[in-house]
Image (cartoon, rainbow, N blue to C red; front, side):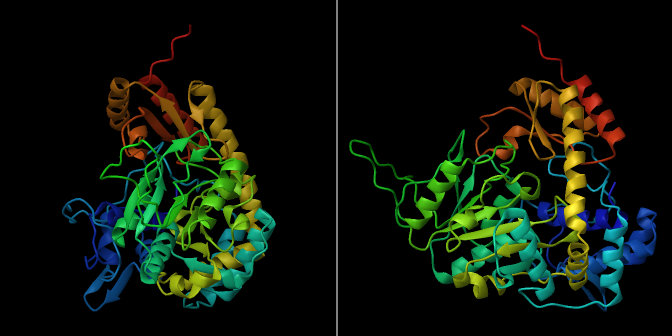
Length: 451
């Protein structure tokens, strides 16, 4: 289980995403929240300090509240926030949950102690020291030589994507983003927050299919003999793709499809590829799109899954023509978090931690595969899928929730509910708790019939 401060930070972020908290909302005092949750006040102070460092929370004479200028997507109608910040129950098997069980090393703790001893604040694009170390990390891990000037520190993947789209909006391009279908719905809320349209891209065995090469924002001409329609697709000005570890399919884009995307981008004046480098530390075997097209690709990096979402830190690798504009739109990032990560990188902690995580991921996938041989465990990650009929899916989801299992519908990740089944996360809890949760789920899902 993650630490109390990490749980509080994650809960407040989740409530912002769901709309139960909004910019300007007041939060309980650290003392009141500590008493409500039955934890030490110091844990709440630590969580609030991290949120303040990320620009999410501001403190004043009337207490702490969500930053009034925080950009939040348009969400469904809000619920009351009287119970805001209640400690979330540990929900096993939640998709997308990071593995934090192995992040308890002395190197990690020492990095935070060193950072807290001499706190600094950094303006965008971030700590020069951290940017230099990340450039070196990417060079060694991905065989991509980069200069530190190309790196911008962000508050995470969503903050990075928002900053890129905001910068493109200022440049005057058509505000239309192509996204994978299926794909992560949480990132798809970001374009709407900055006024962009979202266009889902068709998918085949090799991944998302490049759209017709026409001017960004213009309609594609129909082929001879084909009828045009009012809804004819317009080519996007930017596309968000996950070539190394597509979610929830777990597929990796082959080299040929990567070249097709680069050719599409190069045929489109002003277009941009936004490469979500999700889980690349665990599974990158092909060159990044950035390496193939450095002038037209932004790399969207996040260490949330390999370390912890509570870090609240990610990075962008940005072409020179966009760097200044993107840097002006990035939210403030905790200086202590930046320094802690720099210490961790200097001590070779990230490389060694990644090796431990790979071993743990492999073990957890093997447990899933032994209990659900009919399932599909994503290679290199902590997600899995189980195909079910629509009727069985509905019943399984209902029964799973009654047992505290947070599995999700596969249809959640598609724009149209064409696929039925569930998505299972393997990152929460200890090995013992994971095995127990999967065993409970096995009791809910009938064994496949042998033929």
